Length: 184
Image (cartoon, helix red, strand yellow):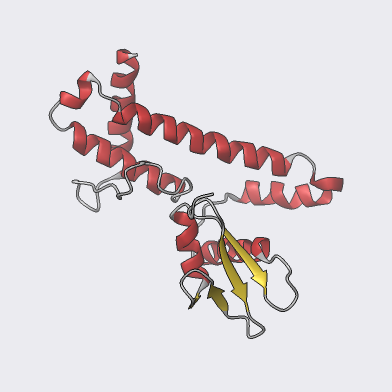
């Protein structure tokens, strides 16, 4: 198993400080969120008891982002999650969420593979800029859910203005998808 496939082991000390066992330094919740955004799995273990605290800390990261106004989960989804706790055994919600996120990651990967494949559009002037915009748009819309899905190991750079309207990006994405579907 490669280093990237193994979960990053974080130990929680009695003082509640979190210790990264790979780099031998203390980390914050925001650091852990960064590892996850970069596509790394983490495992958080209580040093004294050996209990796995990963779920607790991941929920805390989500709660902190939501409390800062970074609302990703609509209220109706949160209501459904609360309802799923009322169903004996949790109902179908955990499996549904897991399969939904797997499908999202797979579709992003396939879309990026198709974008990176050699095709006549790649010769079109401005294609690289459109590709970079689409990568940035997908990453922004998914909050980096898929980690480093471009496969290149580099972040997408956009050539657009930072305050470019989201509607323009959606329009460009739609036009690009139409062109790709015509090629298929």
